[in-house]
Image (tube, rainbow, N blue to C red; front, side, top):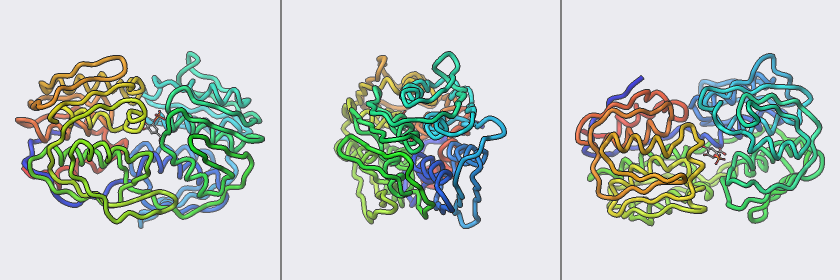
Length: 425
Ligand code: S3P
């Protein structure tokens, strides 16, 4: 499905977002291995997190989507699935679920779509093999994964890449391993797994960038609320910052400090963003954002900040082009192994719109004060590329077509509906 996006004069209104994708994956998987029923409000509606529920159902969990928006999951000991487990477009499933399956008493196979089948999973099978796992991969590196369950033992591991998925995979495997599993991070990544495991009753301790988890703890079902997805909010924040007229409120957004560097970065560039009504629910911070039209300076994203903003870089690239001084992104080689090679897809989209960008193997430089010209832009089946360029289209000099814009439903099925409500022509 293509979408035609017309230029907008202003952005305003009040928005609520789908549940956070990262947190939903974790609650879905952990609830399925916890004893008894979990009730999860605002579980993500996107296709990725629905794939998680499909996989956990195939592994024996009972999943009920109630009319009031509650997702009820009854978990316990996992059962051998009758067929393949389908991760769809989700790299998070291939990495994290493999951790859960490595220590089970059965063999299982995880498959995915074309994009997932080209994304490396040896980054998780390496530490899992050290723990005693036996996993077969295509060409030693890619899905499908055939996971032959084996008894596991705890290890001490420092992931070579900054990856919450790798950390989470090792910790989830640690639940089913003998002894203690320890993960040291060089760069702190999102800590939703640590928080969720604590909530469900795991024996886990976090000190600085080290996480220790003792295997064998009994997890029990919980009632939890998934905060709105800050990575989805980012598209609307950028939309508001691109407009001369904007006043937008975004309700109930996740503000976990391992994710909220986005707000610090934007405010540091001059964005007028206020955070109000902050509260803590299930160990996660949640609050409302109000963003107004602002002159943004541009900046440099590198090192630990790159890891913290990795999912927001396509949207920030768009903002960078219209900022005063432009945007430089370094240390972002990981972008090349996301749903698409996002350095290449950001470059292609911006160039289609007449925007200058120079790329490097691990990043890009975008000069500031540039204009967006009307164009036809390929999403390449990548949800964040579809949404980032829909936002750029609001600031273009004529209507733009976003090809295969339906990809947005991987994380945000109602994205275009909401965009049309807040964009004023
Ligand atoms: C995620 C971690 C990040 C992120 C992805 C979701 C997670 O991936 O890009 O969208 O939920 O843990 P990496 O762990 O590969 O950096």
